[in-house]
Amino acid sequence: MSSNNDFPEQIEVDIVVVGAGIAGLSSALEAAETGFSVLLLEKNPYIGGRVAQLYEYFPKLCPPTCGLEINLKRLRENDKIRLLTLATVVNLERNNGKFHLKVQQNPRYVNNRCTLCNECVDVCPVERPNDFNFFLDKTKAIYYPYNNAYPQRYVIDPSYCQFENCKMCVEVCKYQAIDLKEKKRTIEVLAKAVILATGWDPYDATNLDYLGYGKFPNVITNMIMERLASPSGPTKGELKLPGFEGPIREVAFVQCAGSRDENHLEYCSSVCCLASMKQAHYIRNQYPEAKIHIFYIDLRANGILEDFYNKAKDDPQIEFHRGKVAKVSKGNSQNSLLIEAEDTLSGKIIQKEVDLVVLATGMQPTANSKSLPLEGILDDNGFVRSDLNNGIFGCGVCVSPKDVASVVQEATGAAMKAIIKVKEVQ
Image (cartoon, rainbow, N blue to C red; front, top):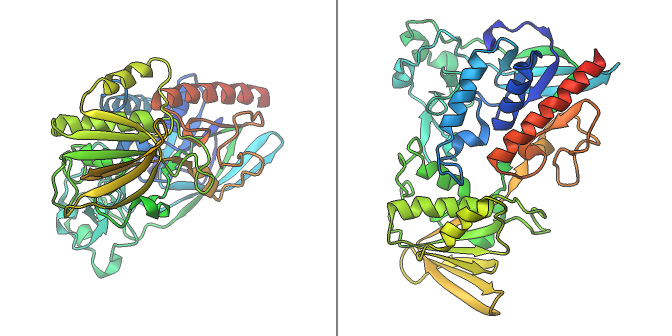
């Protein structure tokens, strides 16, 4: 596999994969291991996407690092894949059955001589909010995105680095791995098929003011919960909020926070119910006496995942309430919160006083906000259409919300479709 530092200004490949989360990584590997040349593009300075931010998968409750490490090994050993991080597609045209892409690569300012010795981080005087941990902590302006991130070298955030006014990192680096004068590059790409694996963003919970996000520090999102539970997260895996002191005796999970709502996301994000049950497991592990309340509209747990639901349902400390939460307000004690919902089974109003509220925010496709010209490719909700056969194929959550196992299956299918198209063009 080749990466950023040995890239020509023009390149021709069989398949371009846009996005190097679990979907893009899987489809790129499947195509490359079949013998086709692949250019794998990623906008972030690391690969792994949202999966890298998770603590555990459901239903097996195992860490994603296992699967990612296996895929990284496959990636490193395959010379059919070229990886370009910090890269976005700024133009896409199709002529004579082939795709012409213009790709912009932003500078990393750190080359492959980097050994992760940490001396540059130690001397850097500037901090930045850590977006990987949803701004719950900070890193230095030169930083390593997360434990075992790939590429395995630091990156500099140009929004915070003082560049020529500082240069302390350059002076301390004995490997000459830092180049503060590195510039943006534009790369012209010719390909026979394109796979879109652009992933998803959590729905912006600040749009849900009635649920208290941004107003109360102990109202968090499900993705923030993943980072709090992770040993590499801002609290080293301890389920507590940075800077907020308070007991965790009762917790409410609010399902469909912004989903199945014509004012926000009209569709179901499909995995939120099971993700909340998984996170209830996180809480029960650290706080065995904690009471969990899960407020839902409908529960989604199909096939083998029903066993996971039944296990949660049989836990005497987990209580399910069929009703959409209408309001989160201040509770009677200093840090408590009051949940109000209508129980649609009894028709009565439920009120529960809790210490922590976790919002199961929906999955929103990032493809909708891209500059990539996608006319006719996206549906009304911004997802990549699944019925395409024009040489552009989608996979993963950019097509529809789904769990990780389904993402990998769909990524394999997208690779097969792209291979067929490549053969047709040849």
